[in-house]
Picture 1 (cartoon, helix red, strand yellow):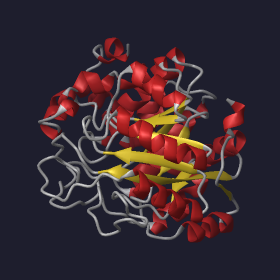
Picture 2 (cartoon, helix red, strand yellow):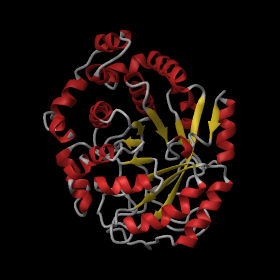
Picture 3 (cartoon, one colour):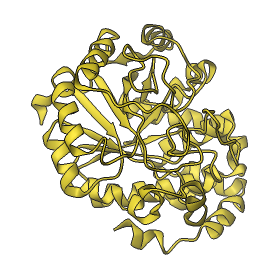
Picture 4 (cartoon, one colour):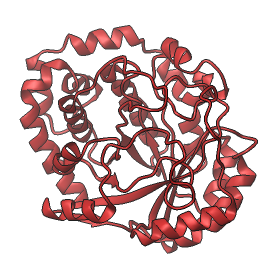
Length: 368
């Protein structure tokens, strides 16, 4: 279990290691064909900023070799904003007095048709964490409606047991996304004071349960803005390396969510600039040429236009982050504010202008 490895590391010591790196450490890392986690510390350190162009060129070349000039397109579909957790940064938090909404079967079908009309064949299903309202019975009902219409179905829901992940796999789910939010064990509790999510180690063990279920792919990440992004990114990379070695038949993706405004929201504790995010994306690609790197509509048009060639392999467009946002109830509260509001068609044209191809379908169910 990853916990056994995690407990041998200490946040403050990792922070000190990262911030003590110098230019020679960065240069040494960039001369290597394959870097290790110590090199990764150097590439995410402040000392690496003068080497950003060199990192970008290597990241670009590595991504082309492995993924070609393609960007996988996906759309999130929010099924419910019911949630029993209190989280300081989320619009769906239990203590946020909003109108709660869980889509019915008929409403789900309307959303499906709306998303399909945009050209999507890859959908990401999202809910708040409320086992009684949006538990396995609800997922079974929803997936029976959704899976016949999409070749790839991903889910971002509450942490589940291994047997439940096995059931989702049997119902047609391809990918599970689960974000630790922050790997700072002490500060984690301050951001998650109530609900099942407040159990740091249960959440930390979720990728192990996913891996044991033989899920095809899983996604990891931290929410940048809660704590120091450099230290959280090291722990995410440590987690990724462990999972790739332990569950080697599973594919992996990394997402880069930065804290965005929501109703009554939390200001970022630590700012992550666009330049910082470019540095991190390049560092991940240099560390791991196989991992998929995803960017969402949280980011601005300008940033997303320029990040295409730097290592990103998947992107959302035209996203709605509220239940029923595509057709059923467009005005309900969003989980977070969208920054890039361009349509999927506009994003596809932008990708093509960059010399890349937008891929709307990534695999066939018949292959599994």
